[in-house]
Amino acid sequence: AKEQGRNQMLFFEKRMNASAMRRLLLPNYLRRAVERQEFEVYYQPKQRLSDLEIYGMEALIRWRSPDLGWVPPSEFVAVAEELGLIHEIGTWVLRTACAKAREWQREGCRSMSVSVNLSGKQFQQQDLDATIAAVLEETELPPERLELELTESSVMLHPEESALALQRLKKLGVSVSVDDFGTGFSSLNYLSVFPLDTLKIDKSFVQAMTNDAKNAVLVEAIIDLGHKLGLAIVAEGVETPEQREMLSSYGCDCIQGYILSPPVDAASFKERYLRQG
Ligand code: C2E
Ligand code: CA
Ligand code: CA
Ligand code: CA
Image (cartoon, rainbow, N blue to C red; front, side, top):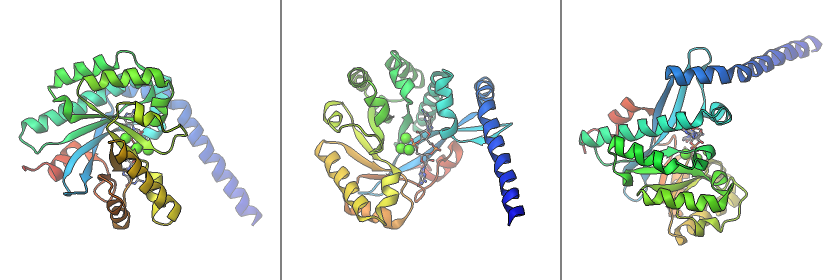
């Protein structure tokens, strides 16, 4: 048993070293990834529950590093923010996603909205609306087809500035959704003050819902609250029919999650969801 414990210790140390090493090297690899264009945009479908229509897609960045393999956004987006690389990367995602949506529209594919995640740092950028306006003009994507996803925490960091920034974004004709709703610890009054369109219920609620009655109550209450404020509700992280049925019975508008599909590359998305129609 002593021997086994020792082996486990060694194993643990090795893993610690590997992950510490990775964190140490990440900034350099990330800078190089920007230069070498190692990123790709994947798309995940969103479905309306009333008619089961796939009405939109969320753009999610993917990084395949030749040295580190796949690095998830949860690992590198924060680093990109620290290094000041997020503006370049974020604008690239925006341009790529808008161009793809426009390309599919031109090809006569059925109408789809595209959602793009904005990090807190991007949202704080003074000329964000100008950047977005430029991308819309360049790609010729109709603004009503673009949705921006912002987390509660990035909106609530500087509420007054955020209100103004959101107004500028809304003037462009795009819509705005609150991502990961329920995970922040902010007061709720911003929901009635800010010009928002959609609440995305965080997947932690959706996943706790089916085996925890109190969580189910919370989800139902969030849906009612959102609706009373005139917001559409999207539940994210929906994996099982049971979760979908429950959300449907609560009046949730739309779902997103592995039950439909994980995020996939553009070619696969087109093949599966955009053939004619
Ligand atoms: P998010 O915006 O909340 O995106 C949803 C995440 O949940 C995605 O992870 C997606 O792959 C995952 N997901 C989707 N359906 C399911 C499901 O049914 N079950 C489970 N367990 N997970 C599901 P991903 O792609 O790893 O992204 C993680 C986060 O990284 C995103 O969370 C978002 O905050 C950030 N992110 C991703 N792409 C971008 C980007 O282009 N720009 C910025 N600023 N952030 C991004
Ligand atoms: Ca999102
Ligand atoms: Ca989310
Ligand atoms: Ca999330």
